[in-house]
Image (cartoon, rainbow over all chains, first blue to last red; front, side, top):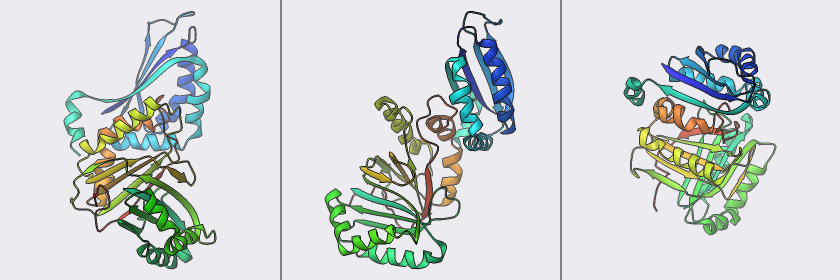
Length: 112
Length: 219
């Protein structure tokens, strides 16, 4: 299994708005591209009306081919760029995206 | 070494005649150290119908060759808008290179990138470093070169020419695509969903059959 993590720090007071927007505007398209949303984590475990919530979305994909499939679909979809370039930035302080795998699978993934 | 690269799309009805004329003129180019004129293979992306790549000792030799009769013929061929439907091109000194000079060769692949999203020197250097470690991990890359053009043209102002040779097509479409150094590491520079994204989505990915090594050759 391969994991993609969106690790997003919301602007102060925008945590819940960011969560709602991500779920409504980003998640359906990502699921249509073959990604499975496994966890939606919020830190701290309450919406902060004046502080910055950190949101972590953990996606799973079964293999490298699925990763490429989702990437290629996203590149062809102007809604994806619009989300990350226009819709989301007013709600985001900083963000990172990671692609990861379980440590015990690295040997298999490397052996291609 | 100094290289001239053209990725040429040609109207279908003219392809045979164009290819023959391009080959003939390329053979007559003075001072060429290496010549490649080959039809692209199915599966390219923005990859044209012919790859033309000629190598010279230096830029002066390349310019002299293109000013010759044969060079003028080539320039007239690619400038013919009735025949040539797309043209991506770059002139570049060989940048970074590696791989075994005499390893078996069967496929040449070139990708042309435009790194135009916040291209700070630090980000460009990191992108170059990450790209150059790919051959350390993708065992099917026989030879490679990563260069930055002096002059580029086409649909984008290409900033990077990333070339590889493989023994066969399976080496490109298998290990190169499936190794995590690609999809889990270098891809962050290309993926518009990553905040680190550096390279424009429009790119050239093209390849052709090869019967002799052309990259990382010293003479």
